[in-house]
Amino acid sequence: MEAELFPRGRARLAPGAVHVPDWLDAGRQRALLAACREWARPPAGLRTVRTPQGGTMSVRQVCLGRHWYPYGYARTVVDGDGAPVKPFPAWLGELARGAVADALGPEAVPAQPYDTALVNFYDGGARMGMHRDADEASDAPVVSLSLGDTCVFRFGNTATRARPHTDVELRSGDLFVFGGPSRPAYHGVPRVHPGTAPPALGLTGRLNVTLRVSGL
Figure 1 (cartoon, rainbow, N blue to C red):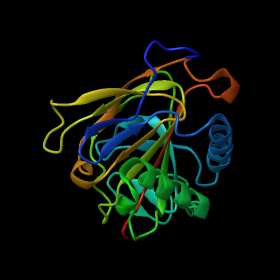
Figure 2 (cartoon, rainbow, N blue to C red):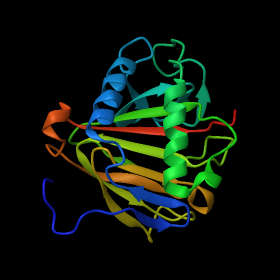
Figure 3 (cartoon, rainbow, N blue to C red):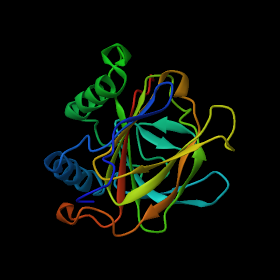
């Protein structure tokens, strides 16, 4: 939006869970989008994720550093074309560390380097059910960056997929970090608002880049 009645400010949803609006400026959004488009190319490119029950996720995904599949990590795309996973670039790790320092403070930056990324693509009808990021051997903060269409991000509690939860609007360029006591919290995306991406970005749909320390 070009003008708002109440400017968006950073918000602490729970201990260790912080939303920082407009963290990526327009130039950094374009640069990250260009990188995502390269990563999405085969081999080891954008794929449809299949669940162990035989279903498919509506979100499509590409991984860097380590390949995530339900519910583990591998060095190759074991549930796709079998190619080696694309490398995790050092600059992306530095971006993650800077995000944690900004959102939670320098003391929250993990000693271990960030080494894995999940890039999720949402078209207008895609959703993400409530889940926990529980396949890592590290409790380092999770860093989430949004590009493109606005979504409703649902941040829940650490005990159950049900209430209580908080819905927050994530727009292109927004940062969300959750660590500490909020690291095992359930979260999901119940809704994407098609056509809300900044026109100058040149993206139809939503990209979410989630950065993690695998600890593996």
